[in-house]
Length: 221
Image (cartoon, rainbow, N blue to C red; front, top):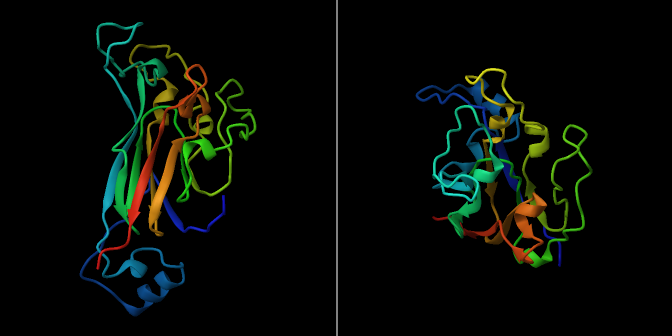
């Protein structure tokens, strides 16, 4: 598959910038230009929007282990057996330059590949090195071909789930829930997958599971 170059812009969750209106000075404008387009200087006049995407979500669906259909995360944190490995909506519809907020619930790793890529094109034998922070963690796909975005390594975010010494304390695993925001500026149909290998491909059934498509249309006038 021919490699193409795409431009992505990523904003890490947890960072916020104040919005100030009604004030401008030349010094401030010059300072902004020195930061390579921080802010919205390069998007003036464009009709941009943000699209929210659920990247995995919690029950409380019934499971064989817990048939009651309830799930209390107050002290249970990230119970992987209660996570639905789905990307919703699918396909994701955006315009070039729009931001996509992946609302990630649980141990997931969003990866986006350029137009023309299909699930079967991903080389599942190319894996990230074992993370010493979480050596027992599941394998993470590391195929770089046509990849335009790869999210944070969930093994670094929350390597272990610590059992609390008190029922009122929350396990460390809750920190895996996060938001990662990306912007795609070239129209086309992109493939988005969960890079956690057993989430993306079910070896038992031979089926691709946690994947979807992002349809990026030309920017509106």
